[in-house]
Amino acid sequence: MGPADGERNGSITRILVDDHRRLERLLESAIDRGGRVERKSYDGFRAGLLRHIGIEEKILLPAALRQRGGEPLPIAAKLRLDHGAIAALLMPTPTSRVLATLHSVLEKHNLLEEGPEGLYYTCDTLLGEDIDQLVIRLRAAPEVTVLPCSDTPAVLGAVRRAVERAGFELPSDFPG
Image (cartoon, rainbow, N blue to C red; front, side, top):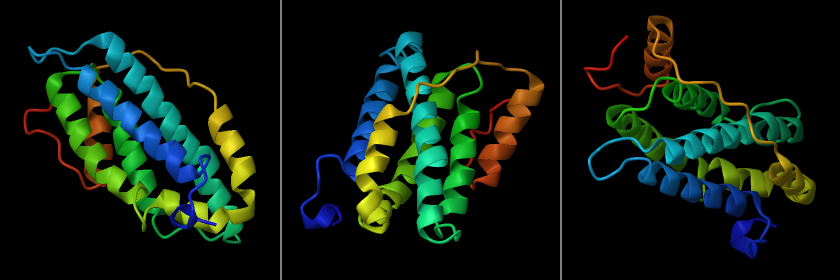
């Protein structure tokens, strides 16, 4: 039974869409009215987003792959490119410009995961009998270790490459 057929409170869609909304609120609160980054909110957002990506990469996509007999979901390669770009954007010191870029990328990326054609609904439908066990694993996913931000030329170059490889654009004044 999928979300459209009487969505269960513990569905993949409900859990991960709710987490998207929580992360969006943290991102919004990470920029104060003067355009400065509020680090406590940003650090919570950063750790939460990395955990969320980890859940998708280490639990959800592999479960779908197993259910499909080793064949990845058609959307999996694009999701992985996006996840690489998003994680890369979390590496440099946050600025209002970096956060604006991240917000733009996440708006596009979240469309691939939410909705009737998205990753979450697909997994709710595909994983049927295994959803309850998967939901337990999603909820139990550990927090991730978050490294300090870095603005070295190597990091900034890696950010640029990851974002461009995923088909997104950085502001023209982005260093690296």
